[in-house]
Length: 269
Image 1: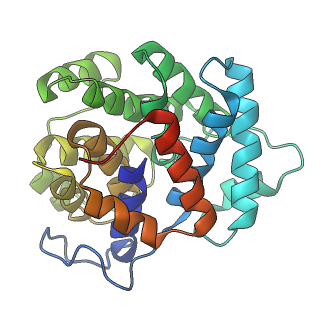
Image 2 (image 1 turned 180 degrees about the vertical axis):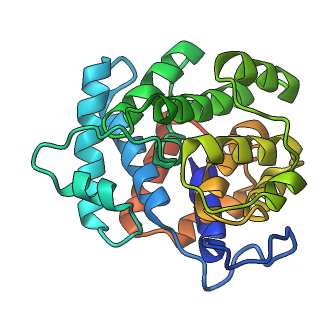
């Protein structure tokens, strides 16, 4: 999940078209910081670890609600959407039919914790369903986690493309250049997933994928979080970047990330 969190941090200073739609930028500066994407990524990771690998879907959903409310209330000014922050503070939080990209940006832990693709998708869907229960919200979470799982288990990019097209039906036909040209700020899964997938497909390394994502403009932190999560599964991450990521987050977030490494046995490349 480092890939998602560092992608969020790198993209944070360019959100709302504050960048030049270019890949040529300083990767990390003093202006970069984590946002709600990172907070909720940590929350979902904690939830899935607490629930355990063999948890039922209702158990995963209950753990996800508990963790996301806990972390959202701890960091309430991280940049959440209005409906989601209302959900965070609700006495009885209920799903609200969202197809926002929040379901995809927070799901990366599901791509690492399970032994089968089917179980990965089931858990990913459960983490989305507690709030983003629109079919597009569920699909965005499942697709992101599936790409991570496929990448980390040795699938080629061609195999990943074939799987995504057959299972999720996202349109891969646009180039990065065409995406930049038609750009508008859009926080839906329908817009974010094709952009993240193309950024991942065209990238040559973790950093190159994140640069692709940021160059598209708009919701750059979330596009980079989703694309970065996919890239980490396929390429891994250099230890230097993992260390930079750990240095940029809060102490309690870092503790969850380090626990996640111990649980998954995942190490940098």
